Amino acid sequence: MIIGFSVFAIVLLLLIFVVFPPSKGNIPQFYDENGNVIENSLAEKCYLEVDDGKLGMVIMAKDIGNPVLLVCGGGPGIPEYLMEYMCPSGLSDKFVVCYFDYRGTGLSYSSDIKAEEMTTERYIADVVAITNYLSERFGQEKIYIMGHSFGTYIAIKTVQQYPEHYNAYIAMAQTCNQTESEYMAYDYMKAQYEQLGNSRMVEKFENCPIRESDEMYRNYFSSSLRDTAMHELGVGTTRDMDSVITGIFFPSLRCKAYTWQERINLWRGKALSAQFPVVYDSTHFNAFSEVPSLQIPIYFFAGKYDYTCCFDLQYEYYEQMDAPIKEFYVFDNSAHSPIYEEPEAAAKWFDVILE
Image (cartoon, rainbow, N blue to C red; front, side):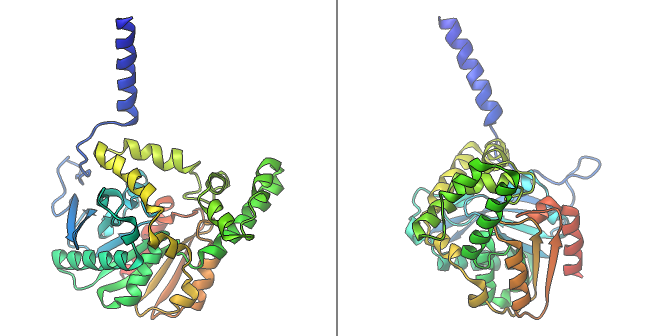
């Protein structure tokens, strides 16, 4: 009996270590062909104290003399560095790239966080603080800024208010009018299931008429139906991701760039973020009316199959907005995360931007 229990305990412990491997949480360094750390490269996890809080970030560069890029990730709650870890984009070949975690999430999670204080204004102030830190640390008067999904809401609002800090804004999966985007995605996915003859999924969509009430819309927005359909049809996070559970949750548990506690905090922050006012603001943001123009160049990176932030809306916004320079780069084989899905195409466009 005791021997049997001991064997079971050992097997269980081994399974836990496979699914949830221990780690010191170090960021992988950059090595040359001889196995030496590349001179002037950087790969670190660091923190910045801002207004009684501590913001965590990952900074990576093959050469610290390169232009600085601040990345405002999606979610909020899913660290953008996690996407980089799973699907390397090559950004660090061209930039000193900073992936920071929003206050109350990821490396910036704290049990003392008050959800109601996580406002748009708070997040913009944090972005400006990190921008100033990066500019001073790397000796660059202006830096580049990129937003991804939810992060495009934060980044474009920051650039609108503080254009003097930035060389250009790179909008990956720009959120333009999320309510309209959700309607368009709903109609598209329902029609796809009708064509496929999947009556079970068609019935589920019909039982969730999102235009009938705000409550129905909110329930759908956070439902498994939306996530399942987007990923089954290849129009979600990436073209080939089956679900957030298998594509992000399980890989996050195995990510050795985070300690055990950091991995737990990642999902504690993700759960808490549902209560943040900034999340509500982002889902009701209308770029067409709120940000009709920018004072700096803007470059759109759009996946042709993106229905999380609908491709057609992104292009419509690009056509209508005014900026000193604007370009729209289409990624033909991508959904919501083009630089991670087609890194070679992204590298080509980054070279154009940096010319």
